[in-house]
Image (cartoon, rainbow, N blue to C red; front, side, top):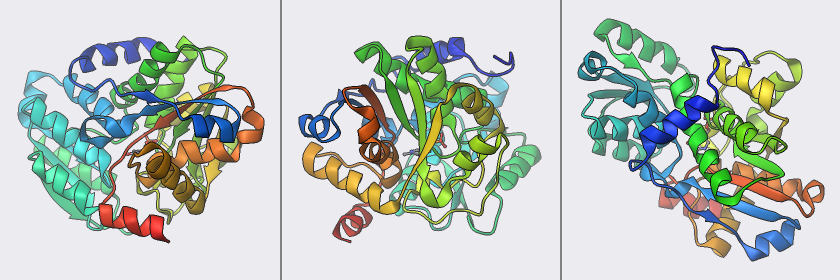
Length: 321
Ligand SMILES: *Cc1c(COP(=O)(O)O)cnc(C)c1O
């Protein structure tokens, strides 16, 4: 592998930093799901992670590698939600000042949680402004460390620790399905999977309305799309990262897509059958497994359930539709 890309040693180092700080989330199974799909499905439930999503892993890992001077100066990030909370919580644990750019239409729960962790929040327009450019500019002006949501070696290495825990708990799998936005979770998971279960097929799953990574994967170069309109607000990324895409090209087998209706079907399954609240973006992986059932017969299949942060009124509306 390209020597500048993160590797399995980086995921192991992240796991060391996260030990005793991140939750070791449960791996759950459902008899009725196994019957429906005709496979054995292991769900790694990052909706039960601190701040409600796997993003705590990457955020905390990235902040842990900063030196004393960088910690004193502080960090800046941008996010529609979960990365904001991850950086804000990690910063509060490590006593680092944090400034976060969040879209003005971000979920009220995510906004409140980010502010609750003590971060300073600045609003931006996700359909008109380039949040990354805003964050980079502020980092430059104020000497802050910029913590991007996915395209950063320490961020994606941290995200890979969820899959690492899954393999350590259940052993080899035939296939692993991973929710996909900018590719931090998928690239980190793929690195862990190739080390722990070399024969495991790795699939990313993104919303059908925003299939930029599927297009990029098939064309062999990164494709940029307009900010997609989908209920999977954690996967509204217009383009995959450069580092994450390099890892995805090398280690991932294919990219699946699912519709918003299929996301709601998976969300209803989690709520009704497993008594779990999973946010729409966190439903991507299971929604793809349900669609691909015919090709997964009798296999051992891993599903990363990426997060559970959704406003209750929105959750109820989505299920009522
Ligand atoms: C950020 C996020 C994703 C996508 O992760 P990437 O690393 O950007 O691919 C998926 N699910 C949830 C809940 C998220 O917060």
